[in-house]
Length: 280
Length: 308
Image (tube, rainbow over all chains, first blue to last red; front, side, top):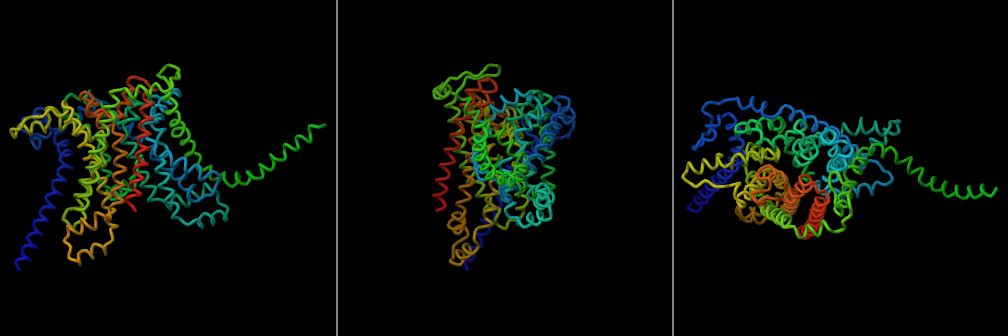
């Protein structure tokens, strides 16, 4: 009896402990975001007050209009949306086509190319940044959208992910289509690519996020104020926004699209990002 | 007169070569049509720049000057550069702390979320929020929190504790940079552990329970050992990511105070794009590359050992 009781008590205590740890972890993850939203709605006097207010006494949206006057937020947004969308579409298509080819077709040089591409996965992106800059400035790509986008238009990671996927699709589909006289390009676009829709969606999501989040390359190749992407603009925000409430408003505006997309499709997001375990 | 037979002799091996290669070409060209965009991109923006960066590291090169060959001078300079040594030390410091935290804390959280607790779906979403926000945003949020007159310092003062210098103090600044790295990626590694936990053989856990093992003992002796491969996997990705530290320290501290948070990549950025010393920057890039390759081989050895 006594033993059973102490077991039960130990169980309750360990449960309570688990909930406590979980609560602390969740609070630590969420509070910085909460404070950013709350602070963006405060006047500077309240934001900097000696005794922190947990919620603005007079919620005020003026920082959200003022930040658009302080920095070209609209332009930053446009630049990011444009470059990330182009990167997503092109990189997904190009990497999927290459992945399909390696998985389903036999051709001269197949092994060699595969090994070469695999070997460069280990090369850190940062060590290529200098030669890319030298090349791109020679060809007039400094401060251009093409310059921002070009290095990301194909992904070795995407190639391996799609190769993996297309290996699981039976080759008979292609053989039958070939007998019917279909061309290889048509077979890929009309039969295999639609089959791969879930994998393609995952890859597209990863490509978009990767492009949206990057700082180093756009900072180097497109530093001119009107060419800055959202991340580059945010990195310089403290020079333009005198008080923290404006910076906080800029942060909130910048994360709205990604966070909204996350809440709409959080299952796909989590699965997709987990699939992208080997980033870059 | 004598030209014709000579030509015929020359044509024959060529024809034979064509006979051999022709079918291969005919067979291969549709594949190359599909591969072409990828391969062109690969050659132009991956392979060539990679070789070019190694080449540049042996040159004195700037924005508007023709590169002049200097042999190993950039590397010799690297060895004697106190800034580089500091950047390397900082990066290794950062990597050790962050990798330790990122292999253990997410494991704990994943084990927790694997229990039938109420609200765990919500908790998973909350812990994933930092993962979907960019490094720049995360760094900005934390630099606002730990601002001289930010909410953390005000909170400390309000509770009659001393306010802290945070970004003005080298050690504290580095601690914050580390904390941000861990905070941002916790949820990410947690998801990887959670996925691996689904694959832990149930019969093993049940057998342990039948043998009278308590929950904690079975986690410690059965679950965690079976997660060894994924732990290794997490540690190796975390290491590679941590060695490339740039964004947090660029946004929050610019490498300061007094280079206390200067990282290797940041030094590369500074030397190449602020001082416009492309040769020296490329030497730093090449050293980073060698370090990462060495780490990968080291990792491979550990992995082989672990999975034995």
